[in-house]
Structure formats: C-alpha cells, structure tokens
Image (cartoon, helix red, strand yellow):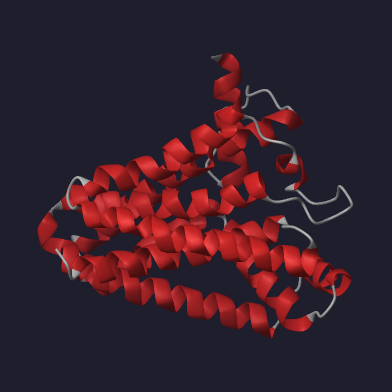
Length: 262
C-alpha cells in the first residue's frame, strides 16, 4: 500500500503542479509505474476544471465560465500537454528528417507552427465546451461533471496507450519522459484502461451513445502511432502531449455530435 501511495503521488507530481507531501519517496521506477494513474490524474484535473466552471457560472454566463475552466485546467497541469502540442507542431512543421524534428522539438523556443497550433486548439476547446455545456445545461450538474472528467480521462488514456504499443524514439536519456518508456506490466495497462474508461462508462448510463466516443479516440491513437513511427521511429513525451490535447478536442466534438441523438 505504501508503494502504491508513492506511485500515485509520483504521478501527481509528474503530471500536475498540485503540491504533494514532502515525505513521499522518490524512485525513478515509480515514474514508469505511474502510468497506471495517468488517466486518474484526468479525474482530478477534470474535477478541478468543472468546479472552476461551476463556481464562475454563479456570476457569469457559459462563455466566460468556460474560459475560467480552461484557465484553471492549464494552471493545474502547468501547460504540460499544451507545451507538447506546441513542440510537435514546430518539429513536424519545420523539420523533414528525424534528427531535425527531434532537435526542433527539444528547443525551448516556440515557433509560428507551435503558436498557431496552441491558439487553434484552445479556440476549438473553447467553442466546443461552450456549445456542449449549453446543450447539457438542463441535464444536471452530475452529467456536466462527468463530461469534464470523461474527456480528461479518455484523452489521457489515448496518449498513454501509445506507450503500450510503440517504442520511445530518442536514443539519449535526456528527456524527462524517458523513464516511462520502459516495458509496462499488465498492472499499468489494466489500471490505465480502468481509470481511463470508467468515467465514460458511468456517463453512458445517462445515454449509451457516449460509448461511441471510444471509436474516434482509438482511431486517433492508432493513426498517431503510425505517423510518429513513420517519421521518428516511435514517440516522444511531446508526442504524447500532442495526442492528449487533440484527443480532448475529439472527445468534446464527439459529445456534441452524439448529443443530437439524445
């Protein structure tokens, strides 16, 4: 039990800016095992984002409340995944060889492709959430909370699944995501899928159509794996961040499309 607590807090420290107890043991192997809790972190980030939306909705309309929820979500993670999206956009937008793409992605400076990708993605999430939450406003706070938690957990499952089915692309050990590139046991895989899909399964009790969201998200995962392997021979931490962000948009858009049949 003590080890599991350490692994969970390792995951929380690695993927968010949430303060953790100072007496938590640090072990590089915990980062690899922490992948089982990555979608669970989505529960936490999604829950915090929902609380921010709910609290601000007491004073403002849906559009402003959505901005607050996105802002709090970014502050909670430190823009960890958005940074990956930006780096991937710069790397693949400006590089034509594996070596050049990896060099650009490693550069801390943000280029035009990265800025455009981040702006467009945030706009998509803002517009999508505004429309979705407006449609779902009459369904009750529990459904709204589940929507937030589900799109955060499923998107993280999509990202971490690439670690289970692909290889790490960088040959050096300088990347902060290198420790999670080790082989994963059944515990990590099963844990990730349980925590990743459980909110969506609970949401499907409201309407089973929500389960269809798994299809486009799974397609994104497979196509992303093939694309990264074609150009890089595998994935990097930035690639996982990009997939997570795109998967968020796909989940939100899928929820909107499926709502028409409810």
